[in-house]
Image (tube, rainbow, N blue to C red; front, side, top):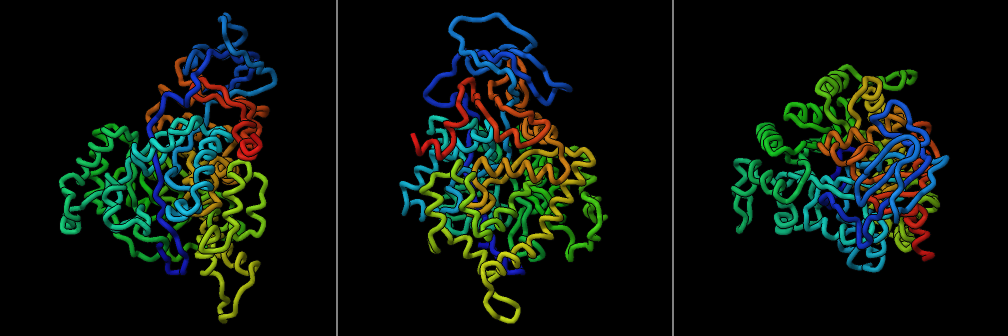
Amino acid sequence: MKRTADGLVFVALVPLLGLMVIRTGAAEAANLRIEQVTVISPERAEPLRNATVVVRDDRIAFVGAGAAPATAGETVIDGKGLYLTPGLIDSHVHLSEVPGMTPAQEQAHPDIAKAARAQFPRSYLLYGFTTIVDLISTPQQMARWNANDVHPDTLFCGATPVIGGYGIPDYISKEEVWQQYPYMLVQPGEESKVPTGIDPATRTPQAVVKRMKADGAVCLKAFAEDGFGPPKYLPMIRLDVAKELVRAAHAAGLPVFMHANAADMQTFALEAGADVMAHGMWHWEVPPPAKPAAAPLGTVSPAVKKILDEVLARKLGWQPTIQVLHGLVDPFAPDYLANPALRRVNPSSLIDWYRTPAPQGQWFHEIIAADFAKNPDGSTRNAAQMRAAAESVFAPLLAQVTNATAYMVQHHGNILFGTDTPSAPTYANPPGLNGFIEMHRLVEAGMTPAQVLRSATLSNAEALRMTKDIGTVQAGKRANLLLMREDPTKSVDAYGTLVKVVIGGRVLDSSDLAADRAAKR
C-alpha cells in the first residue's frame, strides 16, 4: 500500500500480459461476406457506403463498393443499415488479477474467480475491444488468459520496475518478486540487494530488453513514479539508467511506454526519451496553480503548457486514462453496484461478493473510505459526507487531467486510447465497460467521436508498430471487425449497439458475450 501526504491510499497493482494470438479458440474462422454495409475506417476521409467486405480465414480479402464475386460456402451477413469499423485497441490494460480481489481472496473463492476469469475476455469484446495490450506481464501469465475459447488478441509489454519501486504490489514477498518480475532492473550500486540465485548481470537494461524481446513482448513499460502527489517516498529509476533502457529498447525495435502521471514525471519521461506517456497528467505543480472557474476547457498553467508542447513537438503518444481516478471515487456512490451495466460484464456471483463487508468484497473501498471517515473536528462522517469529502479531494485532480487532455486534443496531439483497467484493486474499473466510459470522458474533454475511433484503432496500431495487421478495414489486415447499428463518428454510444464482433474472422453475436446472457445459458 502507498499512502500520500493527504492520507490517500493507493495500491500498485501489477497485471498480466500476452502475445498477439492468431487463433481465437477452438472454432476456426470461416469464409465471410458482409454486404450493403457502411464502412467507417480511420484512413478514409468519408464512409464507404453500400460496401462489400469479404473475409477469407482470418484476413480481410476484399473491401469495395457494390458487390463482389461470391464463393461457395460463405457465411453472408446483411449489413444494410449497419456500420462496420475496425476492432478497437485498448493499449493499457492489466489482466493478471480479478479486479477488486487479492490473490488470497481469489484462492478463498475459486468458483467466483473462475467465473470472472472466463467472462472478462468476453467483456472486452462486448464493447468492441478486439486487441488489448497488457503493460505488465509475462508469456506464462498470458497463457492463462489465452486458455479461454473466446478472447481478444492480446499483446504485452515487458515491465521494468526497480527494487522497491512503483509497479510491484505490497502483498508479493521479496522472494516472489524476482520470479514474477523477470524484467525487474538492478541499478548500478544495488547489487547487494539482489537475493542469492539471481545474477545482477541478467537485470541490466540490455539483459532485460533482450529477454523480453525473446519472450515476444511488443513494447517496454518503464515507471517514472517517486510518489503520488507531493511526497517523494518511492525509489525510482535513475535518469542515466532510464536513458540506457530506452536506447536498448529502441535498438530492439520496442516502443517505450512510461508510467508518468505528474508534471515532473512527464518531464523525466521526456528527458529519458520515452515514446508514450502511459497516463494523462493529473498532478500539476505543487501547490496547484489557481485556475479561474470561468476558464475555458483546455486551460493549463504555463509550466504544464511547456511540458505538453514538448510532447506535441515530438509527436509522442499520450494516454489520458481519465477513468483511473473515477475508479477510486465511484465506489462511494451507494448505488454503484446496482448499475445494470455491471451485470453485462461481471458475473452476478462476483458482484454479490463485491457487496460483502471488509475484509471481503469491500476491503479496498474501506481502505479508501478510512481517509474520509472523520470531520476536521474528529466527528464521524456519514456515507454522504464521506462521498462529498472524497469528491472534493479528487475533483481538482480530475479537472487537471481533463484540462491537460483537452489541451492535447485542441493542439492535435497523438492521443492513444488506453484505460489502465483496473488501475488499482477497485471494482469500479470493470473490463470492457471501463473503456466505454473512458470514451465518454474523452468526448467530455473535447474529442470528437471520430477522433476517439482513430485513437482506439489506427493511432494505437501506429504506436505499437502493427499497422500491417490491425487498425483499419483494409484488404490484407487481420479480420477484427465491429458491426453496429449506429454511426460511431456521430456518438460513442454506438459501441453499445454492437450486433456482431468479428475476431480473426470468427463471428460472435454481441448478445452472447454479455455476462447476464452467459448466466442464462
